[in-house]
Length: 175
Image 1 (spheres, rainbow, N blue to C red):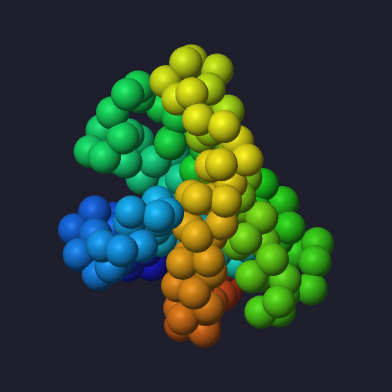
Image 2: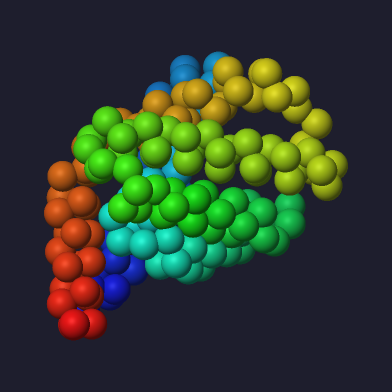
């Protein structure tokens, strides 16, 4: 039941990213900056922080591949690889660092920047993108990170509570 809830949440966020949010962002912003909401990535990072790194890796790979198929099509795999890797790296903090809202927001910000940087590196490596990193950092990475941090802050309490309940029920069944 717990993984069904999590899969439904991630799928709903996946649909929300590509449909409604494109209409909500004002047209004047879209001419100056490129805002890419990665709400699925935020929840994958939360999974890494509050459940474990392997679960975050699996959800990151699965929903990243869904992103590759549906939204980003220059090549298959970079979003899946980037989302899975950042979820796994966020999972390395699970249990090692005191979990508070500040640590969570710093991990979400670092994970979002790592995701965008890995994507840039892969696209640059395979000559899909020829944009300058400094321009991309100012016009896409920072605005996207701020939108994703606002979303992460808005859903922090319910998502953390639900993920900690899920983790507690899993450890109770293992004992």
